[in-house]
Length: 275
Picture 1 (tube, rainbow, N blue to C red):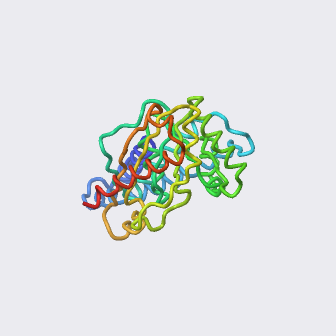
Picture 2 (cartoon, rainbow, N blue to C red):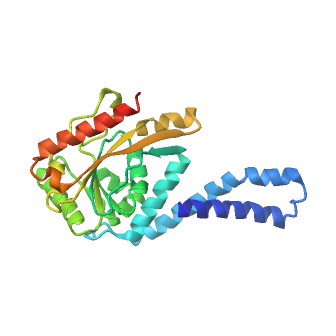
Picture 3 (cartoon, rainbow, N blue to C red):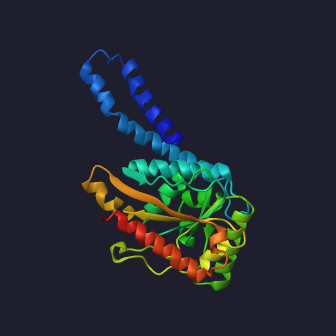
């Protein structure tokens, strides 16, 4: 939000200063013109912001192994996530449940890249590292920032590398560096109206070593954002915490039982928005 407010303030100031120094503020229609120009100045300042991010990214190397997330890089990831949600005209509605004040494993369904953005923003007060596909780390600028923020790449085609990623995620929570976000469906569900994909149980092993709570979150309508951008004034995404499962509750469960329970929680929560 801070970056967004700065960009908006700079846009208003830019338009106002041009109006003042051109001595056109005495005519109402010029003032109206400068007000209408504010969105254009916002775009211009946003381009400058992206250039600034590119410059900062030059100092981030993906060759250096990341153990502890870089909070400076993560701050920009969070701020940019909020900015993208604003530009996409997304309205987020949440239930009253709160995220734990300790590091947690967050489990959620996955229908769109817009799933991740509100979770990054609203998962305060904990930094959030996402287990994601390797291709995200190759995106210009963005890839370097999420790498230095501690996001974890997982290669599901290579069992050995996948185990290493799960162990790293578990240690991230155990060492109190960040919470971890896992989408156990394993891939984007392109037809969420047909129900959730099968939950892969392996990722739930992340929680057992640090004995952390598991926060089960249901997300609905994120897949409609792109379509609604052209048709509606805004899109509404629902993000609801279904349950925070404490270690004392799941310690004797196996990962299959934990996956099935989490899936059931999300399915029941998603139905509440269909009524």
